[in-house]
Image (tube, rainbow, N blue to C red; front, top):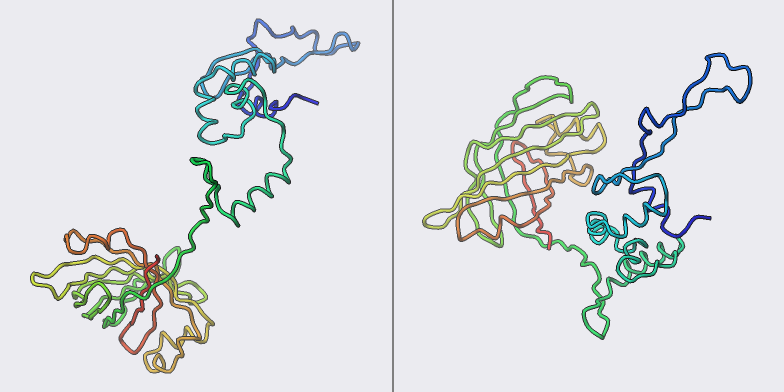
Amino acid sequence: MGRIGDGDIHAAYVEFRAKESDKVRSLPAFPTSRRHRTHRPQCLSAQCIYCQSIRAKNTSRQRAHLLECPAYLNAMKEHNPDNPILHEAVNGTPTQHTPAKAHKKRDLDTMVNGFQGSTSSAPQSFPIPKPQLERDFQMSVQLNPKISVGPGIWGQRNWVSFVSGHWNGRFGKGTVVPGGQDSQLIAPDLSTHIDANYLLQTHDHPPAFIAVKMDGWRVGPRDVLEKLEDPSQIDEVDPKTYSFRVNVHMETGDARYLILNTGMWVASGVRRGTEVIYDAFRVI
């Protein structure tokens, strides 16, 4: 068996063939005995992929180089702190090999119990916070009739522009400025990808303007999606029979609403006649 860390050594080098002068000479094309067979050139050298230094293909010499290679040690500190060669370079002795099952159990314990703090004598637990949703605003938008752009390489493309609308939420209220649009992509099963851009105007004096981008999917059974495309049946469709979900991003340069630039939202949508209504939830 090899020494602990030999796998890390082999991963840190790339082998290449020796120079022409070092190759074993090839003998006649039709050898008559094993002694006369043509020998292939051997990989006699290896190059460190971290600093490009060349070493003989010798595990002990390669290990000695890695123990003193700043580029390799810095990379291990950042990406693989349990590396045995790094431990040997810092402490003078290699670490004992930890079985794969022990690593998996440790990772599971970390996920369940959190990371153990090491900056104080009393260990602290830092579990990963679980995201929560908080209802933040609602928006209603009147739509113009859709324009069919035609079939493309990804599916049917439709263009839907916005007449106007209004919105109301925890951070304010206002109107939807006319002129936004939704570039819809209809898949063969009638699933619809939403790629919409809105401009919100607040009721402040003077008003603030907030750019809103939504992207997501409206999916469901084919017969339900067919009704959503039919103006005479759209009001009869129960929103629970299909899924209309989008991600929401906001951007503004107004100092009163800068907090919106770093927020995250998900929204649920519903179609009603020529109107689309969104309930948006902030991720906290």
